[in-house]
Length: 569
Ligand code: ATP
Ligand code: MG
Image (tube, rainbow, N blue to C red; front, side, top):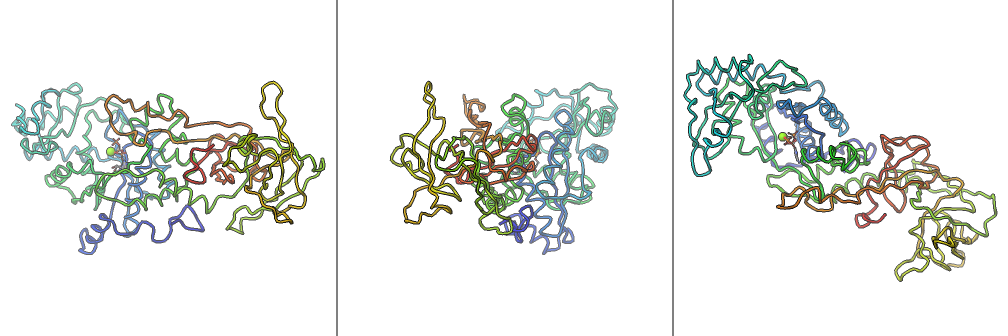
């Protein structure tokens, strides 16, 4: 459902069916909750690149804001300085923009709120709802109890507020070493929900922060920062993934116990899981660091920058997000659906060219030396405004090595000795003989003849051929490198934890094959980086946005033409 005139814009009505979250928002707006205002946010932690799972959340948050005339903020949840980096901040912004969404001037950082968060922490202390605890980490874990046993109070739990306040201020001032003390909320040690058993709000950590530098020695925990940041920004619907469902009571408890400007509603949905795809940021980082892939934007990565480099369009990813919808139950989506959306989009927009990936030389013995004629083929079958291609034809051609077999099995209908096929847009040719390397037996070229009466691909005597193959004229072809990407994992569920199985053993050893010296129709000579093409009969390809240059073209295979062709070269 992409926009036919601009594949990078969503079609009218995209994403606007009423899923359970949109139903909640609709009801809230109708009831006049938040004065009818809708404000969402996308809250990435800048500790990795965005992936296709994040795209689901981006499309949902920005999509809902747009649909209800509201706004969506971009908020970096940057509370963990040791894992975060500006490289990630920059890539996240670039990827969201590429996906087609805009946060205007609403680029926020949890770290911008550190002072306010600190004040609210003091408020909790003063009202007897938080205390400074000196219990060691393993003791604290032990004191938290088990599923069947309630937690045990720390000896510090009843520390007078004034004493906690003094210690907390001295934690901030740097009087204690890292890890010596923490600030904990005083909630409910008997709660069946572990998140409520006096969670930690602050720890001491001498770490340089990419935005606040060395100003802070204490850092808020995610749970303490998140909801309060939502409230500061006036978020109405705080949409997150299911693993936060049992954090919701805490989210609400915090907001109920501080003078918060508003109380956003947290709503959870199922995260996206995809077959053959790994989505854990920690594992993606390892793929990069250990050299399994070349970079975060390696075309095999499920990152938005990787998918982009592979040739996926933003419109196709939005369409995918739209089709999978949102639900409350975890599931795993077939990656073939994503590939289908990409194929659909590229089919509508990509200009066609002939490209011979593994060239086999064909000499037409009865075609005059030095003669060149031109055939006209449309650049796109259903897009007349995309011009015609003028394709030169001459005595020496290249065809795909796979399109010939010397000793063909029954079901092989392409070229073979004594057999005739149609050249796309051109003549019928017949194979007369095969020239081989006398030593290795390798096939060097085919000697063929063409039938001049079949120009345009029809024989006047009505004889038929079974197959039409693609080709290029040797003298007119351009050369390119083609990178055939396949799925990065050979296992359908590489993210599942399995005992005794190291997930790196599930990596597909054949996820990349590099072909040099491929022969392409000259119309692709000016291929701009990131331009997308259909190589006829083969698939969709994209000029690599990093490595492809005029005169040294590099194409990435985006996706095969058909699903069942996926594993063919
Ligand atoms: P981390 O373990 O580092 O927190 P994360 O995948 O949750 O990893 P965040 O940067 O916190 O990464 O994610 C930003 C937002 O994207 C969050 O709201 C998160 O719920 C959402 N998100 C992350 N992964 C998915 C996914 N697979 N499907 C849908 N939403 C996701
Ligand atoms: Mg997260």
